[in-house]
Amino acid sequence: MRFNVLLLLVLIPLAARAGIVFDFQYGAGANYWTDSSKAALNSAANTLADYLIVSSPVTLTFDVTGYSSNDGTLASAGSSISTASGFNKTTAQRKIQTGIDQNGTTADGTINWNFYHNWDTDDSISAGYYDFKAVAMHELLHAFGFLSLISSAPSHTQTYWSAFDDFVVDSNGNAAVSNGTYLWDTSYNTNLTGGNGGLYFGGPNAVAAFGGLVPLYTPSPWSSGSSVAHLDTTYFTGANKKLMNHAVSTGPSIRTLSAIELGILQDLGYMLAESSLVSASVPEPSTWLMSLVTAGGIVVVLLRRRRLAKK
Image (cartoon, rainbow, N blue to C red; front, side, top):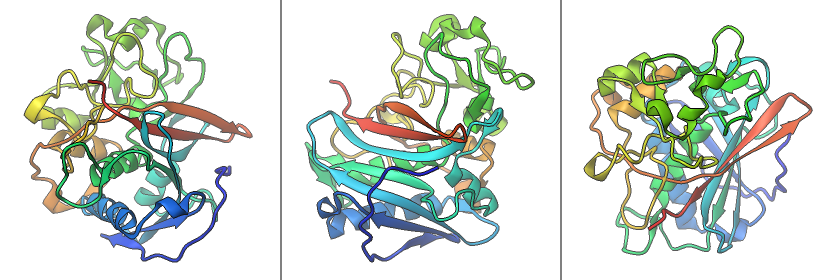
């Protein structure tokens, strides 16, 4: 598996926390990345790493690119995932949790940033500017496994899914994907666009934190890259917004993981730092487009693009 990125390596400081080192390798479009935007990416990575515990030091490598285009996209992130039958972890997720390097010298993930938009890279976000660090945190969490391979009906023919999909259930807690055959249950096609109560995340830690099944974003019509792979923006609103909501607007955004999101990380197999276990619930939003690129039938590259929130 290879990411199609032309690398022009630049020597920069590595971001590290809690035994996790982030090696951001700047390639195509490196000229768009300033010292302040690189520092902001490092800071966002450090903030996420502070939530996690690893059994041994691990280095995550991301190929980072930049561009400028008025296409409504803010940024994109990616990681690879096996197409073996079952519920699979992304390369970055598996490496953090086990220390196992699945892909050798190939990068563990990719980040592509659109510098057409106004970005604030510090901690005081001006009106009309996007919160760089908040967007970076959201992007990285998708690479860490907060994502779904569930697509619009009737596209479900595969038997490989993300680890996240193992916990996708209906309002009664019934699994949408069989844990035996790994096949999508077509009776839940209507749920994909909010019918029959929509879909939920049913992992035990997330449910305990929320006090029930956690609503996922299932708008009608289906929104490619946003549906299912985010918390329900129509439920988590106002002061209750979450980092993993589906859309982001300008101005200050959420940079804190809520107890619900921390519970989801636990359900996805992460060990949390003790200081994270008592967490406030303050978060944020984003809209994405997911594209799947197969490589020799071995892995899928997951790309998510953060878009501007619709007014």
